[in-house]
Image (cartoon, rainbow, N blue to C red; front, side):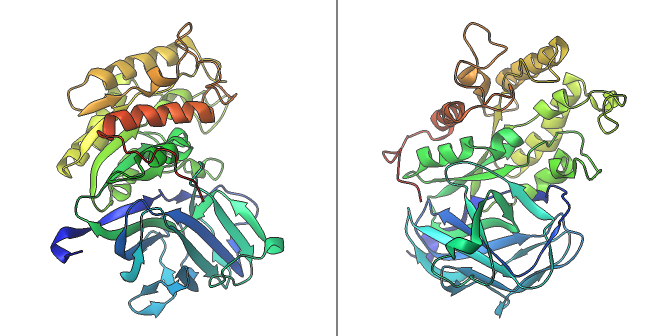
Length: 382
C-alpha cells in the first residue's frame, strides 16, 4: 500500500476500569494472553496499554505479539505509571483480515492488577498461565485457565487502507457483554472495526468511590474523553443510562446508593448532550443513540423507574442532536408486554439480555451503521 493510501485505524479496543476488589489484588510470575481477530489487513501494528485506574507503577516485563516483541522507545518491557496510558512503538508486522494475533504479557514481579475490564462475547476470550510463556507457541494446559478480564491491553491500531474506519460502542454492562462481538462478526468483510468502550455498572452522572462498587467504573464526564481516543473513528453508538435509573435505593437499604443519586430525565438528557454528544460532534463523529432495554422484573423495578426509561427512550428516538437512533428496546422487547423482554431474550435477571437477544441487538445496530452489509456474516471464530 502507498503511504498516501494508508492510515492508522483502531482494530480492537476495550475500556479500562478499576477491577473488582477481592482479597488478592497482586499477581507475580504470570503470563496473560489475549487472542485478537484482525478485521483489516495492514502492514504495521501499535498497541496502547493502560494503568488508568492503578495506584502503583505496573511493569510489563515482556510484551509480545506472536513471536515479535512489542517495544517501547526501543526497549523490551515497559513500566506503566499510575493513571496513565502508554503507547508502544509501531511494530512492522503484516497482518491479513481474519488473522488471529496473540498479545502476550509476562508479569515477573508483584504487579497490582487494578486496571482491567470484564467483557464477554464470542470474540472476547483471554488466558492466564503461571510462569513465563509470553514467547511460547502454546500455553501449558495444566497451568492455564480462561479469563474474561482484560488487563492493561487497551487498544490496538493497524496501519491499513485509508478506506477503513472504526465504530465505537460506548456503554455499561449491556455493551460489555456480547452484542459488540456479534456486530463485529456482522461487520467482518466490510471496512469497519467495532471498538468496545464499556464498563459494567457505569452511570452517566455518578460514580462510586467505595471498594464495594469501584469496579462499576468512572462517571461519563471522566470516561468519555479518555475512551474516545480511537484512531480512525467515524461513529459512536451510545447505549448508556439504565444504571442511573435503577441503582438508587436509599441509604437505609444501601449506604452507597442514596436517593439523591436518582437523576431526573431532564438531567439525564442534559448529561448525554453535554458529556457525550457535543464532544463527539466536535471530534467529527456521527453519534447514534441506543435506547435502554426493558427492566420489568429486575429487583429494583418499579413503575416510576420504567416511566423514566420510557421518557428517556422517546427522547433518544426523536432528538435532532443525534444522527440516528438504534432502537435496541424495540429489537428485544415483548410484543404483548413491551415493558419486558421477549420470550427467550431475557438472561434470567430481567436486566441483561440472553445471547439470542444480543444477536438481535447486533443486527439492529449493523443495519443502521453498516450501510452495506458484507457477505462474510458468519466467519469461523478462533
